[in-house]
Length: 190
Image (cartoon, rainbow, N blue to C red):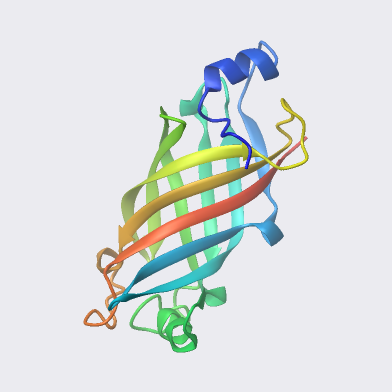
């Protein structure tokens, strides 16, 4: 994996972008984008993934705080490591995909943090919206030259409590904390 490029935004802006850098829109490459999750299931883990429906990203490598992220997920396409877990996940006691087929995230603040960025935003699950904080990293996609920012991979990680969103089914068997890894491959809109 190539080194993250969000880490040194100022240096990156000086070496790879024109002097008048500005926010740049990116579009999702949905076939290569996914949200992974895991939660405790007794001594084991339930893992799974959910397809990314849409992602609208505006990245400003000169001023990270001008960056914006909006992601929508297809709850009906959720998969889990146990067949019965996928069915339960989409059922009325957890995500209730019949009534809430989409989950969404909208950033409210993006700040540099270590080798990446801290992204604060609003996550909506089951019609309930709560603030969350995610850590973000961005890389150039393999096969693209240094300085080529036309195709990037964004990785957002964080955790939520499913009970905060009313997804409380099987609380005696399944953990409350759900750890997320959003992997979105994006292309610059020219």
